[in-house]
Length: 241
Image 1: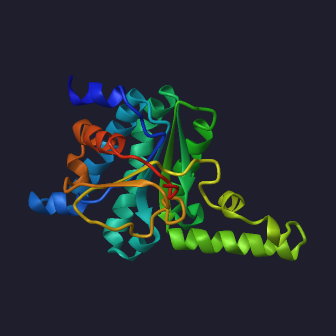
Image 2: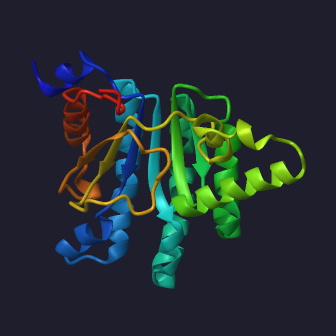
């Protein structure tokens, strides 16, 4: 029995979150401009969507661009914003035809107008799809998300819309960007880094973590299957025993 057969016979994670790290290192190892690493990384997103649909994963959250990434060189940021536009233009029909819904977490207003318009178009076109939810973190930072949630709660409390005793772990989730999406079962981070980098800090409380030295542009279906197989061998206790 090969690895894919083993994976398909066991528990498939409902929601996989991925920190797609290593594009720049991949390019530098090949003495290529950084943009080639980002372009190759974008191709892996299409592969990821295809593979997750085939395997039966229902939700995928990808860390595409953080609030901290705005601090990179302007040329690189501009390229990434244009790359997102190109990705939507080239892959949106494929995504829609395969019944994949695109959702967004982060501050859409931070994006350049052209990027914002393309993202909005993708959200609208795929809004009724339900085979797989592709949740893209753009201009996203988890600390900002949590602070924003607290501000919403304070505002509702001051307007007598909620009772403070009504706030608990579950009700707090509805104020987060991911309020319609279950918490990730599995977090994958590529490139050998072992940290969360301000990604889904609230939602990952009981997720299983999988770290790999493989750079994101080299992350193929075999590597995805390895991550899922590792997840399947673990016993999730959620702190109960």
